Amino acid sequence: MQEFTHKTFNELFDLSGKVAIVTGGANGIGKATALRLAEAGANIAIADLKLEDAQAAVKDIEALGVKALAVECNILKDDDLVAMVDKVVAEFGTINILINNAGGGGGGRENPTTASVDDIRRDFELNVFSGWRLSQLCAPHMKDSGYGSIVFTTSMSSINKSPNMSGYAGSKAAVNHMVANLAHDFGPEVRVNAVGPGATRTDALKTVLTPEIEKKMLANTPIKRLGEADDIAGAMLYFAAPISTWVSGQTIFVNGGGVQTLD
Image 1 (cartoon, rainbow, N blue to C red):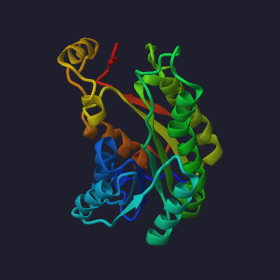
Image 2: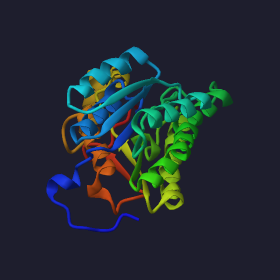
Image 3: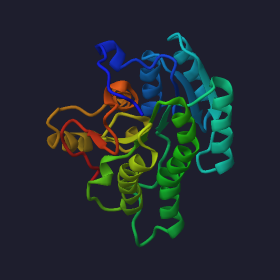
Image 4: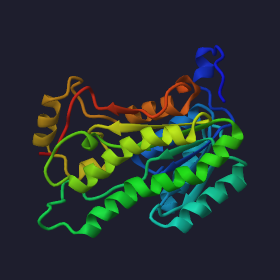
């Protein structure tokens, strides 16, 4: 059990010697999070479908003075998840932090008159089942090490109400509640939390963002700008670091204080 001791400011964010897996870590929020954890001293494993992008991210991470590893991984394939965890443990000796960032789905395109059950099932496989399975695989290593933090990427859609989002939004809502329950299963050594980004400037958002949509989003956002990947990475660091050692089962929304939807 992690006992309370007074820590200095630097110690509260110190991840020196810790080992972190970041799924979907080659680009966007995942890469920003990997870099932020590396700046705090963590060694990083980038698990991503795009191996070349992951290898490029590793070079940026290693430039910060920590060790890094790129692993090609399809989170929909259980064999890939098992092999990835085994490879990280073989390389680094343990796992302390898991950022369940990889995911996706058909949000905004899920008209229930045309979407299939397979479409909705894939949302849950990407956003719920894969993260649950990776948590199951990583938690024993975290418990053995005496330090564990699991962080899921959820979404504002998990609490918003919008058309054509039932599968994706439903899967992200499931993540929020799953996190609250897994905190009981894996505690006290392992904490489990989630970060819910608002509208964040990533490649995915660029595909649908127009000046009109952005103006509407900002009308309902007290902090009058869209999010950047680094904004989300800051919350990820908080949950990964010792500063949050008495925080578990929580979902924090990083959204400029407002609500941003596509409709």
